[in-house]
Image (cartoon, rainbow, N blue to C red; front, side, top):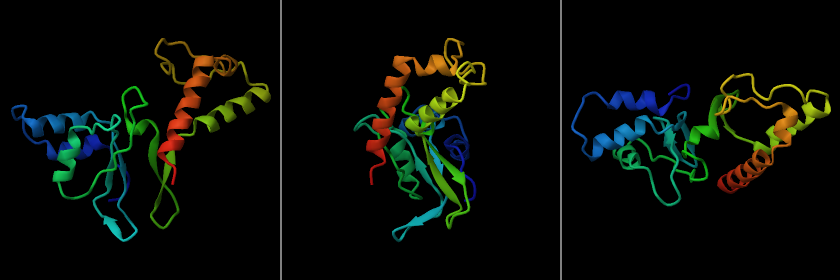
Length: 174
């Protein structure tokens, strides 16, 4: 399969009828709202994933109910990293698959909270501290968009970024 797809578009192919809410239907419904990431088709260490590979978050040791549904398709074994450190455990919050000039045709993009802060600090040093951090009007829940100076002085933001960096570091250690 070429470009990365969302779980939602893939799951729609499986969800054709309105059935009573049995265990399978519940798993599909959860899958539709799961916010998964899809790795394009690839081969690693002699194992081939020609139908792509789904990545979906788990809460600690608790797997999402749709994991069994995905495994029952017998097309792939989903990757299920711990995403319980996020408010909603959506893996698309920290991982994306990007087209690239590589043998596979893609690279994995992983969030870098420390790198993001470094970019803001450089912008601040270069005299742009009064600029808004985001150009999207609803970037913050309360509608307030901080400046770079305000964001870099926000202790909670800095603490949350440090926590996210630690969690991502644990997850992607090889």
